[in-house]
Image (cartoon, rainbow, N blue to C red; front, side):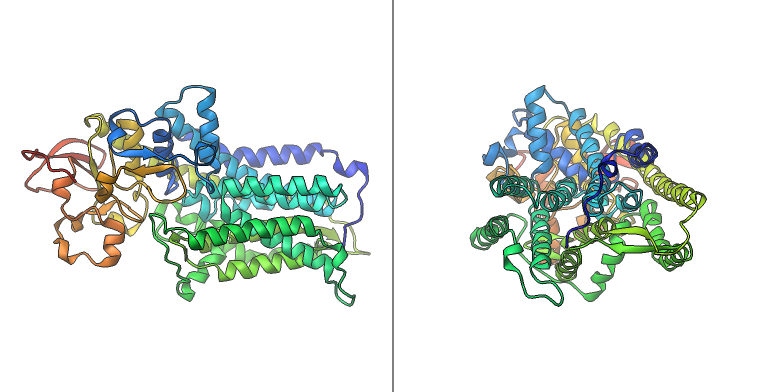
Length: 540
């Protein structure tokens, strides 16, 4: 089942391939370098939480508390949070540092994904190749656009962990077990869903070594110590999750309608529900990619090329594919879990396959290879342009929030509201979280439930929700008894809002003529309004 051992030359870098890889990576990160803010949905919440993790001794100390935990942080799903803790040990940090850190994190996640696919491809096929650069088409995937920061940053390490498992088959058992435990610990701290995917891939790979078509099962070929260690830790996590109290965001699990399965095809290319018109071209390009596959296959066959699957990768891909199809839309209260694995599955499919000449066929011309490489760079540049255009527009909108935030007193309680036309997209569900690092203000849309350290002080629990997002303007007039259970899950802090908040931030509309609200500042469609003080400002 092992690929033939390559000669030493196969492991030496190829200058033209290194240049092509650097050019691809530069195109991917360029929009992140050129824009101060990124239109990745959950990212403002991560930035706000990082800013608070640097210390809540200011005006926000009354609202938030930092829980103690493993490594003075959470037990899992903490890749970027733990990196931020290490960053704070190096030097004092500021609000600008919290924003910049997310640029570095998401840049690593995007380029690291492509790099990890290249490394796994080299391990499986014994040579460096331009073929895995196709993974560059997947870096603008739904996990990135939703801002699933810790998952996206951990994903490359999951792929590299599989590469290490395969590459060290001949290592001493003790060393191999130590490396496996190190990978499991890293993935567990980073994000548990990546660890579970890694476990499925390793199980599939070892099953393929033991059960070969036409041969008797060879259980001695299985790396039992490593496999038992991985499965034991994963099972322990599942048991802890089942017996532990439900996290603040709930514990519901829903498979979702079959229509949700259609998102699996397009999510690796950037299709997100309600993601905003500026990012829709990414999803449109996905349709073109899928339509072009038969043409590319025909072109390869015509030029004497075929696609080969690496030995031992069929079962891991099939097992991960099954897990991907069965993944619920909501798992233990966490939404959009069904979008996590499709990009990993496609990335592994690219790593596991390779273009090889058909025996007896004429080798393809250098002109064809050069043309395909230029086409790949052009498509990645086009996708980077779409992201850059969206980031420029989003940065201008966040700049308007920063402009009005200058009028906020420290510790203000701000209710973020989006105009009636805005809820058609999710673009500003969490943008108001920038008020935390920019103005030291409280907003109710931070995620304060889950595995991270941030939590609300008990006396302010009423100003939160399980999965909070900004409030559609029309809900401010809705009587409390008209709020349904699903609405309360998202906007539990809205009933009685006049008594709990000091300001309203209106995004994407004009200030309403409403008694009790006084406009303070306005900039480019964003308005800050103050609630007229009420004698004795009631406690929440």
